[in-house]
Length: 411
Image (cartoon, rainbow, N blue to C red):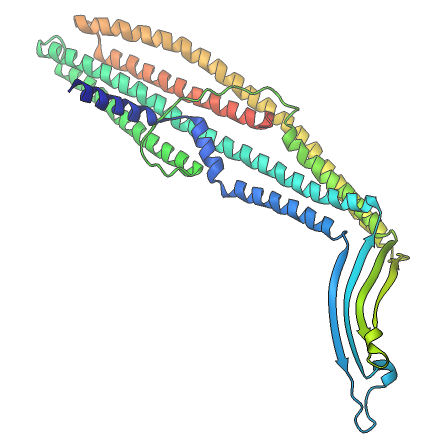
């Protein structure tokens, strides 16, 4: 019997413990369920395949060609047999090999590498955006959970004091109106606690929605331990976008220049080609040749394309300069907000000590019947206001740290 009771308690504890989730759990869920991240991953894979396809075009190209034709002469009318040979059959295997410089292959390969790098970078930024959104909502939900615990504890203490006050009222130490005022305060705190629970349900539902979590059970959230990450190359992940864009334009200039270089191809075929006019069984053979293309003049298109790319580089540099300026301002404002939350926390802590001392003094006076209920209610309201301020300030502080980490960290 004792073993069964112990086993039931063990299962209950395991079930209760499993209902607590942390920030890492929701971030993992969100990344796993995100269609955007999956899309980027597939685009990266596709870019790799495109690069391999491009390389394949520079390998020898073989093709099989089979042609048969018959041009009859009817009553002296028909195609000139000197041109058509009357009839012809060809079954050839064609060979084509581009003979180009190593620089052209490298620059075209570089263009695909840059496309892939841009996709990898965009995926990393998408992960950062997703992590920031999940963390922000998690902070909000866990902050509400902290307030619920405080209000539940406060309501429990007030109910205990209500019992004492009721007895004192029955002995005419306090007025009936004093008891009713205090009772109304207790009911108000119960209502606030209920509203906070409802808010927590909504906050948790939104967190599940953002992370793709299908479990709708009410769970406990472990309060997040979020600290400022060390500065990593001045948020290099954001500045890398401008570097990649510049490299794309520079590589485009190289590709333009390559298009104006002579191109040479080695051509060849082998097989059967006959008009059946003479010794058709001997018409097996091979053929080789060279194809040379030399650009001469295209109406100054090359120079115009370079001018267009130079304008693109200037645009990129302008956006980069503006981003650097705003990046510095953004971090300055966020650090300023962080310092403000720390100052506010210190001020609230000082107020809390005074408010708690006043409440303790009123509790002692309540037991002797010397407390003024209205003053006690005012002191209680002040304590609740300070506690709310502390909870909201803690949430604001964590939200600011989350924002700072987003800009400073490359993770």
